[in-house]
Image (cartoon, rainbow, N blue to C red):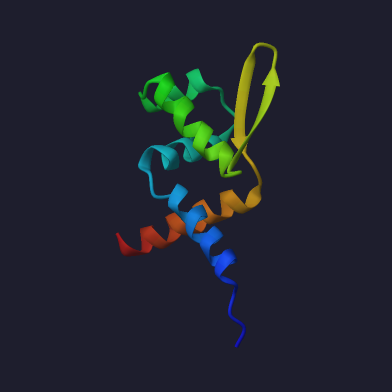
Length: 98
């Protein structure tokens, strides 16, 4: 049996903590569907732009979202397909229970 290093498991623990916040999950749910800017996400979720910006900063620092500047707007999107897969399987798992 091969055990993973403490450092790797610590990193995994920190990674999953990001998914422990409903606002961040709601933002990721929006971004799975299409890249969006702060004001679009804010309107869709009915959450202040400052709160959305704060959570996007956390998501970006954790490498869950990436940015692209188009004109004056900064668009956020899911950083890679792994994040989309994690969300998909998590939602499928919860649907089995409810």
